[in-house]
Image 1 (cartoon, rainbow, N blue to C red):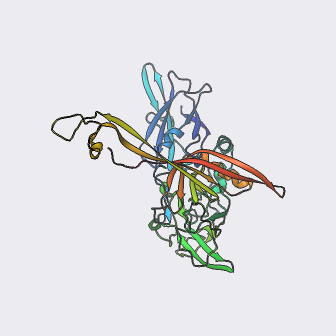
Image 2 (image 1 turned 90 degrees about the vertical axis):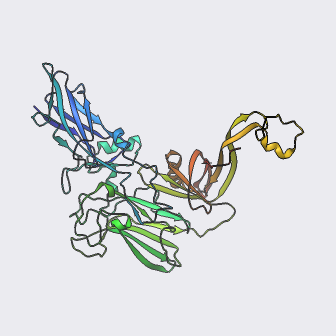
Image 3 (image 1 turned 60 degrees about the vertical axis):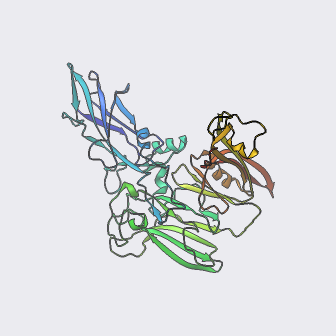
Length: 462
């Protein structure tokens, strides 16, 4: 008597904010007071982290979704690889988790609660279930839970997909791997801007463990007359990446802390040579299990960054950085219009109008010395807050770029770099509206955003 079939398993790469479901059957499902016992082993734990009990559904199956549990292991609050972070790479120890399950059964046997291990024996659950991918180095792969939140239809498509890695298959760094962004591969930015590219850092189907991880990133700088130079940023632990500790590695071991890396690639992060007008970024993996540190084969798509030379000083440029549904960040510079309104709000309390500075509380008369006005009672201010309402606009754009910007109000984390500010503000997007015009039979669209920046400053209480 044991678990007899596994009907459904999540993909190896699974979004934390979409269902993470296993489904399986035991031939004990008709026993009295029967429950399936599901032990969760999170982040490589040797003992179970959580134990769940679940009744069979009407078909006698156990179908369990653990996504809400796994979300508590995704900590995006303080995760940033922009200003203030100095290494080229940032690991995923705070934002990626791993999980597998062991299942069994429990039921009532003449008043005695019996635990079965799922394998036909008695005791704690032993029947291990991993992700559904069987290709690659081993079939026993834990589910890697990512800081993603795909929309309903993309999530449904991925769950139904029989392709390895489902929706995320194009993002595997195995030759043409895509970065975790929603922007195109041609990006315009300012010469002092920060920018990041996030990516999945493990290719299970690689020829060997030397090939499964990204070896590094190549940044090539160009002028109008051609290439100037190329710089290779090795993906090793001392540079914030990993799991390898040096570029002479001959094999690697998969580690949750490095499953998803972020690479700093803005002009403010790189040392671009003089005369650079644009530069490109692409990833590489190793070709062979040798100690050679030479870059191997291209692992990713090519992303081109063009430096914006169309400078204007009429308005401050506002650069937005927002968390996208893939768990990476996207960016855009709003440089056509910037309007700011500043207002304050505060809390108050009332103090009776007595002289609190002397020996006795003599009431101050209306014609008292004006220099003592501050000694009077009345309404006092504390917890002062400064609120900035801003309005920003884009240039006239095509529909593809407008669709990309639609991710801004949908994001749960939007930052704004205003003018020369080196550190961003957290932005609350109130609304996103559009204006349209046709130019030579092409529809162009202008995006307008109204947003709020709240600064809670420590001000003097009166």
